[in-house]
Figure 1 (cartoon, rainbow, N blue to C red):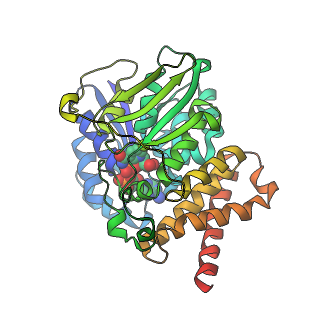
Figure 2 (tube, rainbow, N blue to C red):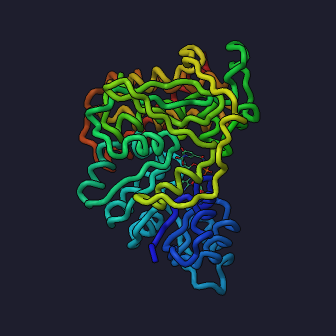
Length: 391
Ligand code: NAD
Ligand code: MG
């Protein structure tokens, strides 16, 4: 029996993970499940999977969780420290599927106790790539990428040397506004930004797909995870979302990973690694698909990509600044206080302000400095937004 924990179990990736492990109940023993405000879902899954412990991120919901778990053997806990404690419980495999920088500390705790970390939470690598990878190295454990593009690259690299890689191409659907006239983006609404043409995902990553902040995070994630140079990584718009990534080798060969847009492939690959086992994903009929299309991303439409390129070149704690400012700008867009295009403008301004603070950007990377930088970036994003509102 493999012991597994799922951080962010109530979300889109978490639920897909539960779908897979529920199909083989004799193979897995569930240690911890975590969620946020959806207590009913968390309790239902914790009971069905006979988890040791269920944790809500919100301390004020602890009593609700206790009530929902009454009469079962599942322990209830709440808050960020409880989350880290749950992630520290011995497990063989931990899914890191919390959204945002909040996933960093529990992910590190899971690595420290020696679990294999299936990493959907790309923000951990963006904010603290070197720290996360170093923690895995020290613990003698491993990180398996769950982002579809990174799982695709990982699979294309099986049996290959990283030195043989010339370039990595990650694909982007182009998001909800791919074909909108540029001027219309300014007044794009929350509802319009919250629907994705191909993938069914959480709301935040869906909006990040429309703005390409998601692809921007993935550029940084690629650089950190595969240790390649920034100019070796390309983004191409591929509206069908069937090719997830391509790896180009020195001899000119380009290996593409092709599959339906279903996260259960990447999750299942990480769950079964190093084996390949049957997965309940659609088999592509390429004759039916007929055509695959590609185009270069338009920098004016997607300013987030250039911001990410600057962050990759800058290094240090600039990834934590970028992500913290982005999360705050996204909160404001969701709350309706800034427009769609303002998100990139706010992040750019916060990055520029940090640029003047070399001591902050080049501080040693520890959980503490990353957390401090993340908080500061959010505070500065708030003041940038307040100033812009007054202009
Ligand atoms: P989601 O919004 O559907 O779920 C997020 C989960 O995190 C929920 O369980 C929620 O309760 C929990 N959570 C939210 N805020 C929290 C906090 N402050 N502290 C603790 N827990 C918190 O998100 P998702 O779409 O499943 O994405 C999860 C992660 O996976 C993100 O990092 C995302 O970028 C990445 N990812 C998602 C997909 C996808 O298809 N959904 C694909 C690739 C990568
Ligand atoms: Mg992705």
